[in-house]
Amino acid sequence: MTAGRADHRLVNVVLDERIAVRRRPEVERERAVAIRDLLEENHFALKDGSEGPYILRIGLGRAVLDWDVQNAEGFSLCRLSLPLGLFRTVVTDYLTLCESYYGALRDLPRSRIEAIDVGRRALHEDGARILADRLAADIDLDFDTARRLFTLICVLHIRG
Image (cartoon, rainbow, N blue to C red; front, top):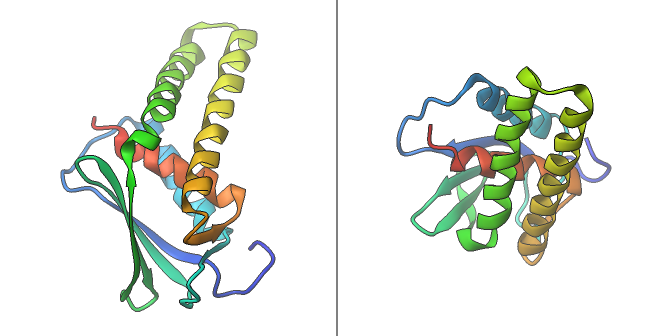
């Protein structure tokens, strides 16, 4: 766990998916790894002083990303709606590079795969920075937590 108080952390993350979606195995693996790593080590605290540990529910609305931060008993402490427009370009570009990366794994030489991966990682970090900046007024989180949460936002955008 990141240095700090033991209650400044997520103990569960739930992706609110209103429709059952079957995703490629690579995507499901990314989702599982992001959640596992997130729950293993994170720093997440509401700035209004509401005590954790926390449960986070993330869902996609029509034009927003809905966040519901709950205490360990499931009582809602904070609800946020982030406009999807904040993430649209970086998510679209990131998912496009992910497709290229997975395709490259089958066909391209290692040097080309590494080049695609560098771009993919850079976009992922850009998305994490956008997320951290947007949440900064309400939630204190470290960069690794923002990165893993951005992965989950991308997973929510994949519809099949």
